Image (cartoon, rainbow, N blue to C red; front, side, top):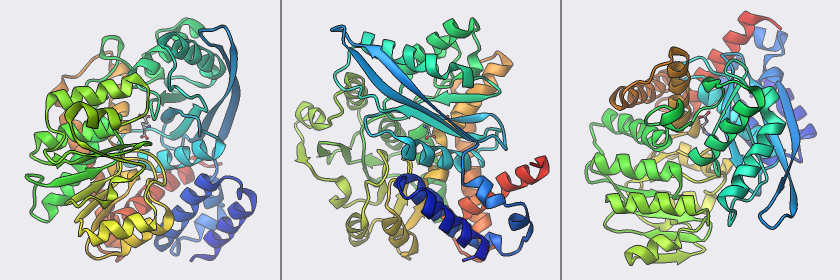
Length: 448
Ligand code: GLU
């Protein structure tokens, strides 16, 4: 590895041993961009890597709120503004008990390099809170969102930082957050948040975008081999927004999603998650806020595997749509033993470093990383920002076609960058190299 990159990695290891997710994300990245570093002494002279692996700014704030019984709870809110080299800070908010600084830093880092190749000018950020939405009433969620925005609104704005959803933050939460933002600032500044409802400035296809985008990306990979999705079996994790979009788009294109999963286990659906009532039931489960997938098995009379992961199920395509580090080495081995042809990440950092290395270096499976195939959500968020600044709303078909084109472009740019460095069809390295080059050029052009 490049000497300068090694020093930066060493320094990170020393200072952030207590932030494992963040370390994991940046160390993997330093390794992958290595082929692109050798040629340019400017990177070291400008101390570019050290400036790229750390966020510009971190905001932390307390989020006190009162439950329906009148008891006060205190949660911890975060916003990590990672980089605005390419445009305003942009990225999701996650409400989940495990959220901490390490998690939001890893998400903000990944977001920066994910956003770099969508072709629209946005930087990278992430945020959230250690709030547990399970079992909370609508009114409790609303009060929580209002308190959260009270802590955050000063740092948000259409040209400053534009939050959106992530795990635990969907259209309902974005509605409450946006309502609070309007009251606090006195302005209906629609570009300040994305993922809004279509009646008040949201983009069509935003809800479906994360899942649709991943399937469009997969289609580009299939196309390259002269294949289509028709008749293919998809093994996926999760049952939330991303999984829901994947099921819908895959079904439209003749594919069959045969698993869904939650923290409680997985469901095997041999006929595929292909019918409208199944899509609707997924949306209901998610809105119910229980965070369990077993009700799907009970509702449709299917087999449920408590406490197990779906990766043991054979299929043509594996698509993780849930959360970080849910694929360990033994899962990657299972995926390879099952002779899966495609591994396409829709969630952020779903595999551990060793698991991903194993999949990436195996000649039998084609692999796409979250910063490429997982960019659909933010791509439509950026299209929402464009529509907000035009004070106009595009028809559904037009947004979908733009999303399809953006995903195909990310694929092609990543493949070309890998090719240029003699790495073959390595979409993960290619994507990291191309986005690194884009962000670093913008930083060099703008000075310190
Ligand atoms: N949380 C999403 C992601 O991981 C969306 C971010 C956005 O729309 O700004 O990309």
